[in-house]
Amino acid sequence: MAAVHDGSTDGTAAAARSVDDPRVRVVTQPNRGKPAALNSGVAHAAHDVIVMVDADTVLAPGAVARLTAAFADPRVGAVAGNTKVANRTGLLPLWQHLEYVMSFGLERRLFDLFGAGPTVPGAIGAFRRSALDACGGISADTIAEDTDIAMALCRAGWRVVHRSDAHAYTHVPTTVRELWHQRYRWAYGTLQSVWKHRRAVGEPGVAGRLGRRTLPYLVLFQLALPLTAPFLDAAALYGLALGTSPAPVSTWVAFCLAQLALAAYALRQDRESLRHLWLVPLQQTLYRTALCLVTIHALVSAALGAGPQWQKNHPRAQTEARAVPAPV
Image (tube, rainbow, N blue to C red; front, side, top):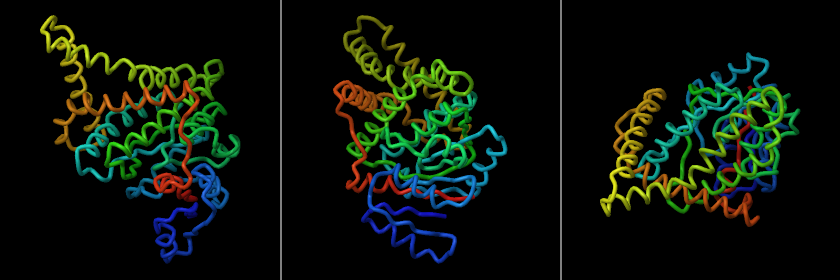
């Protein structure tokens, strides 16, 4: 296993070096951002299947075996694992826990039907080395390298699939400021990746499924819908305040009930407790509205050409730039 230390200062490298196991190697390099760290790990790995894990992530027992089992299909180039929230204390992390199970989990099951998943999460993902080599490795063209590489693999003809039983536990932001920065980067990186791979719409095979199924879904539900959701909420509140028409309010109530049913189904599918279901209505108002505003921020930045970059000297960026490509 190669643990890549890319210039962070939080003591992780020292902790990795203290592991008394000859199979663990710590690779030290100047901080050049996450794509460079991942490519360095790939270069030091010795086997045909490479598992990549962020430094702040803990793998569940059996996760690696379940990920690598998917490569029995020679068409599979990458496998996305199931990322779960580790720090479920406080309202903001609990909302993210519900989001990871509801939105991310169900979406990846849908994309799995296409065989054209748009993202291999940095927290837990596995790659076939020959597939990575065919795409030229992890690109620094976008700030969402996990989305960019998944789309590149699809366009190269490889299937990108999901294993819901391969779990990894990651720490999520605990403050609104941290969450805003993270989701702003995610939204902007998704925009970059969709634009970069837009020509997949007219391509055949797996690339065509990415272009004609996955990309329209991302544009509609992750970019366009967040633009309209705050206005729908405002219309419901306006109708409730003035009592002019019950239609907006009844529509909003029906939407919340549908979200409750969807959350219950997703939690059951992921074998999670239902005890946090009561948070869903608040999540679908306060939390979702905040994420919509983040998306609007990213869209405006893209229009102005003033998006974020990997901040190589920022502590959080350094944490995310450290990955553990593990040869299997």
